[in-house]
Length: 422
Ligand code: EPZ
Image (cartoon, rainbow, N blue to C red):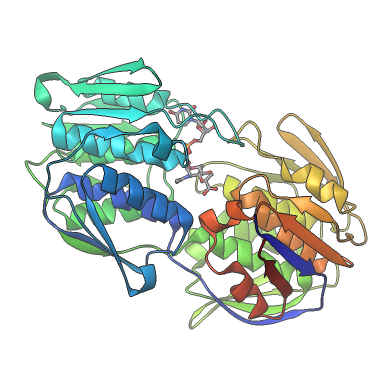
């Protein structure tokens, strides 16, 4: 297993290009199942999760051709469609569950393996299945698979009240509802930019969707969807991650393609911590106003709140802040696994349940650490970039799931970082 070697260094300067959003692309790709005409995605990120989704869609009978070194995904689902999503693929990536809604809408039935838990939490699918049941799907859990069947072979519109603004459930139900008979209303829908991006793509395919980006999404079912070409929205989590590089190391970095509207709550916290973010012609420029970061409290919430996917990275920044910061993780039940690794680097962090208290220390010290999940892996790299000495981050396969060319991008702004092949 490869590792990343980081040596604490000086200030950063230069530009980092931001790729298309992993979490948008993973919802957009299953949309190919909703039509027998071609669906082409541009600005796609080059990530192992995208390759996993490609493998899954291939197993269902969809064709996914990667063009322009993976930046373009040309897809087509002429049929016949295999409606069984096998465990050995689904277990690799929870987002595989996003084929459930499209398969039910297209074929009237589906057998999708439950993804199983992951490092950050149990991640059940009750909001997905309760919503589909309201639309007339009979869903049974047998031998680890969800066996779903639409009454009379076709889903029907329904009013669905979500107990929690689940991103994946909003995406699954929205896709399922595009071909249902009648109108579906999702109350307490997720509002993430990836939801809006999916709705834009589905509308380009002929779907009738309103209210995406708000808590109430209305979908009027249509008989069929046609093909389209859609550009994947900028990855706000990659953006926020790299905005923290100059925040932690000092200097000034321009994030090409960055947009403030994707990360308002995050930018407010950066400002409170003493980090300046300004819009440029090509994106966002980030620099640290003073020598020391100010402590800030952070609570993760569904969009437009502070993103849970940036909590680990923000903790890396606050380890050397002037004062004590309290981070509350409200989305996942076990998303502080980066804390013990940061403590190995000299951080002063106490975790009690969903709350982490971070007392700022003058400087972190490089150490061998282990990546435990996708976002934790990059928070350790960020910490290592400002630490004294060398940090080796192991298990970087987590990193490859969500960050393309991370070593190239960070070396490009002056970080002393390399990938050690093993
Ligand atoms: C999406 O996961 C993202 N993944 C996650 O990003 C992100 O952290 C999460 O949304 C929250 O923003 C993709 O888009 C592929 P949820 P998802 O359904 O859809 C509970 C990353 O690092 N829940 O909003 O799975 C669930 O257990 C990944 O890129 C239920 O209880 O998130 C969790 O505690 C990590 N029942 C909370 O809701 C359900 O049926 C948020 O889940 C569904 C969810």
